[in-house]
Length: 566
Image (cartoon, rainbow, N blue to C red):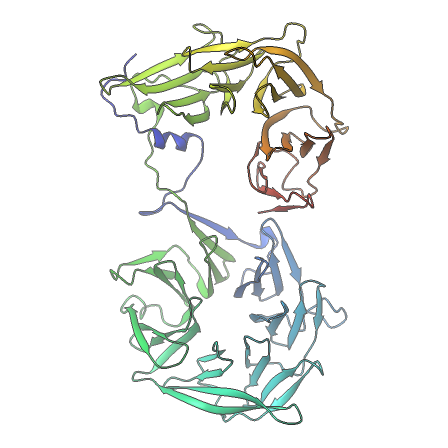
């Protein structure tokens, strides 16, 4: 049958399997983290990602650690070492040893994430500036100009002289890569070097001054190096580490002037994102000057961009944490109803592009579709069903290319194991009459030319021995692998993945995953104890074995068998 009047845009059919939100030009996914997710307060002042990848958020009601699937909250209090001195967390800094310095209204605490213990320093409180040097020295400047630095040996703060008496107009307080303390004001920036004396006390000596031609309103550290400067005309510059060159980046006036004070600024790939304390954030393209507003109806106090995962995090005043990420592809949606002769009315459950360039669609009740082109380049459709082939059921849930055999294994309902033979260009079926439980095979994995493993929707695991002396697969024997299923578990297995030459991973409904050692034959069960996982897995991937659950994704690390939901 020919498909008339339509060009098949195969890639778009993925939308029938995976949901994608399209905002504007790019596929952009927005997620909001709120108190319902465990956030201690909807007013979030600061964000920080530590070296382990955890996201930390300082809110109006304590310190939060976002672990991907839940949130740990560390509230204020003086009785417990794990509590933070103050309830309002304004800044989070990370030291060279992995400790976090928590800037709160009632103390500047050193918090160790590995032990969950806090070292309290309530003597520094109220309104103050804070920072941590690349070597891990924490510093603070109080409103009256009193300056402190942290003595690691004594585990306490010491006072030091700093020729900065005016606190109110400080717009930037940070360290550069050369261990110099930078204190920025609207018209100049002072750089101080740290010099210890014979007694071990540290003195801060003015080493350099950089003068701004136009008054500066905002300054922050740039993740890619140097500093971002925004002047009173809302022009963004980049100042290098040596304080020697100020480069123009882009202008954001007038849209920025309408929004007032800047709460955060980050570089996200080739774009600049600016958040405003009054309301919202904008994405600016420095090359074109194009401006796009993000749909954040709250003030933005801080921004963070994860360069590894390409996720933008925004701390808002009353709206929790907004995250944005771009999908790896942009999709143009085509529905089955758009193709007059493609009569698919059921859900699509499998999609595969084979070595010949043909596309295969497995459906939940309409059989298997093969979309190809004839010698003249015209689109041709072949539909395989129970009525016109040996397909055992019209539900096809999986399409797996053969590893040692020139076939496509078809996972689905019905008796036996079906496959498509490239040599004969037709569907074939492997039946096992003496084993009626060998049915509803959803997935297979070939471990050699004579052995494959199969998982059943109802009857567990099977080891299948094939006769490799023939040109096409033939079953010699089938052995059912018995596994210990918990009282509330299920014998339903949905997928299987091979890891190297030794391990097979099986995903079970309600009972976690099973790992089979092909050398010893031993099989172990790994359960998920987190409620979001619900111990119901549908797909096990490659690499570190990510497993897809109904509401989350888990990663199993091979050696420790420890799972982290992401």
